[in-house]
Length: 212
Image (cartoon, rainbow, N blue to C red; front, side, top):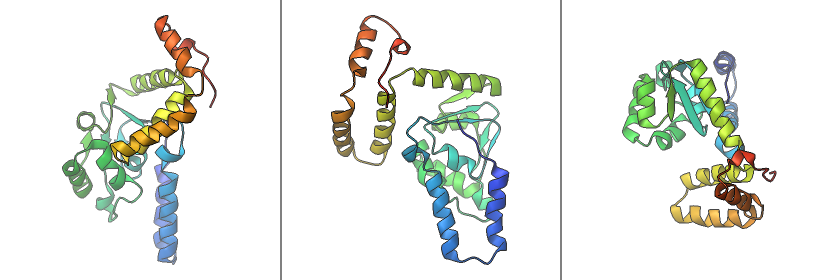
């Protein structure tokens, strides 16, 4: 789970407009921010976004880079950059179309800066679960984290890596990558241990899995 101090980030961005720096320097800063937010590629652990109340510039950039998104019933999301004279530039326009799957809805949200509320966010696929309040959200997120942590680290990381690869490649390329991945990853004892536990109707949490 993650968070960001939007106030501090906002001050950093606004400072760009008060100092005579070159366009190349601005481009370098923006590219640095983009690389910093490529969580799904460089972070090999599952990342969950737990969202309460508002999610505006940078917030949408951040959550679309996460693996699992949850929110409270009173949450809302907004691609607000057009309202402040900017083009969303740190991942929203690149990731959001792949997250919710509707180019028309993405265009509407990005061009009008209207708010998307929790029910619509779930219906469109931006979030997978909606909770009644913050306490229920955190409890649900921690429970989910425990379920993921109770599985083979090798299997969890391999699943994440291959989901991301397949998102950006054809089915055939994804299958070839998966075959190459499993050539090395299937050399642990996790598969046999998991199969034995399933046969004995035991929880995966009872297994001592291989380390990464």
